[in-house]
Image (cartoon, rainbow, N blue to C red; front, side, top):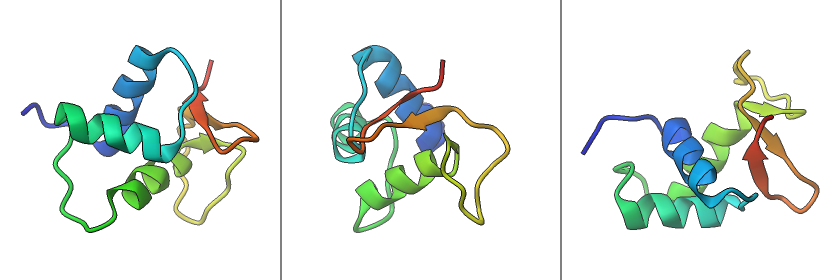
Length: 81
């Protein structure tokens, strides 16, 4: 398995899907395709956290300066244009 971050796996999933997805949907595809090996009981929370740290309009104390995602009103995420 190629080494990638959770955020990189989420980007790959969203690029392939070509539509917004929820954190649960993104997580399921990551697990199904073996894009990331989680060492947690709650991979969905890890995916959501990794996305929201890099999400436009979401300010968290651990946010990064690079905004790669956009959160939509229906709690779905898409890649930032």
